[in-house]
Length: 350
Image (tube, rainbow, N blue to C red):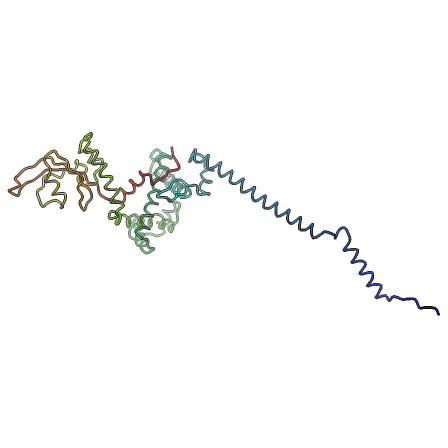
């Protein structure tokens, strides 16, 4: 018998060809290892990006370091360095451990420069009346240090300035200068300070109100009292040294505005006319003698008796004396702190 040949159907042939095609694709050079190649390229790309970022960061760090070196060596000399110092918040000072950024200074400096330029332009002052740039910079630095110290005291005393208080001050104290015309005030503030009304309120009015509030409480602060005592002891030492006339030291140091101009002279007075403590110390002195520090509700006094008359027994004894008064105040405290090691200044405006 003749066996039948195996006959493949068309469908079977198609399946075989399809399978062979797939085998060829899977074993072709283009397909073999494609996943590994993709991973390698992705890893290379990732490393490249990371390297590029690191390189840019290092380059930026080098630029900032170089700018910092040049800026602190010649502050205010190059505008581009000032902008870099402001952009990266270079420290310009430190007050009681708190850094003050150059960006704060730079903003204040631009406002001040704009103000003086406008005053010259308007003919209010001449160019010769504008303080030297170095002086303006030094003054601004001191103002920023004072502002930082005031804010520290405000936090200590838990003092805040409310928006209502700002608006009241704006209406009562500022608007009258502009004939109570809001539009006129807005235009003038923009012209003089290049500030909006809201910026003016936040900066000028809020800071002024905060200072006044802190000033009211500061004289009772034990730290302020201690600074006052130390200052008074320094003045007393100069008085006792006798190198300068008492009246001259009064004019230099006394905080009694009523007697400072005339050398602290209190004229003649009897018992019962002066505050307790002061009177007791004064009547114990002989003509020409100078007291040690005498503390009263007003501060620390240094008393010098010039003459005595009358009889203590008769109750009409009188003395002629002068004094130096060192009183606790926010202004005194700020100056004492700024002269102490609590303040670090990193920029020397020459």
